[in-house]
Length: 176
Ligand SMILES: [Cu+2]
Image 1: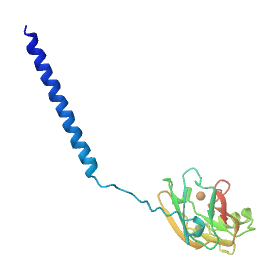
Image 2: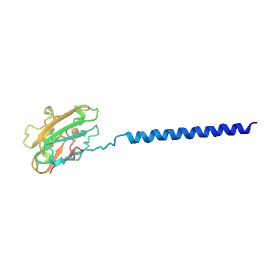
Image 3: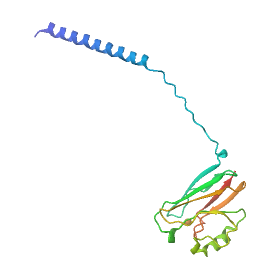
Image 4: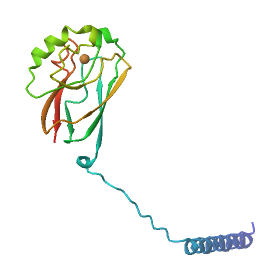
């Protein structure tokens, strides 16, 4: 066994690896020094929701007779673009949904009773004097988008006027 030969081979290996490391280091440092200094200036404009002319609202209704929002906040004078999605699969005849925004002081029970008579009109009663805005009645997988002006500041009721739904499908529409 030639111990000294092995020793010299090991020594050579050690030297070459040191050389490699130092070589790499030089390369690295030169890359770093050559690289231009990048300064990223992020221009994120945070728009106050109260100052937007238009506000987009998405309201979903499902097969369990539920809306996903119990409160909707908008600001006085805004143009409201409201999209109602029916995220279920049941047909309009058995699980139809709409969104009806009512004027202040509307008696919800009375309104519902009148709406129930208006099946052919998507449960929108003939007398629409208490309605500020409404979507059409939709079934599973359908959507409807409406655009209207937010009324004066205050709290309003919204509901689904399909018979029997408003006990669960209703909420507050707050105009700030
Ligand atoms: Cu409904």
